[in-house]
Length: 69
Image 1 (cartoon, rainbow, N blue to C red):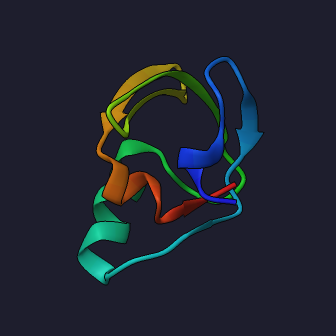
Image 2 (image 1 turned 135 degrees about the vertical axis):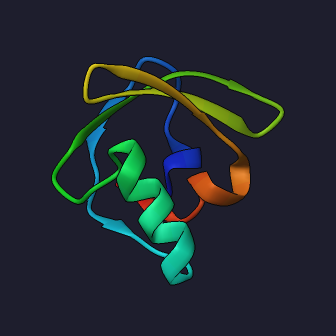
């Protein structure tokens, strides 16, 4: 399921990162790599704030839809 389907407080493991090469590279630089644990902190208007690798990152809904957990 895409990251946008998770609820606040839920933890899951990233299975796959999709999208164009440049988007995948950008998300990987933020720590969104397969096998990483990700926790949703909050969701606002489709935008998602997550904890990943000891960091808090905000991404828009379009990018969050490309991350499968």
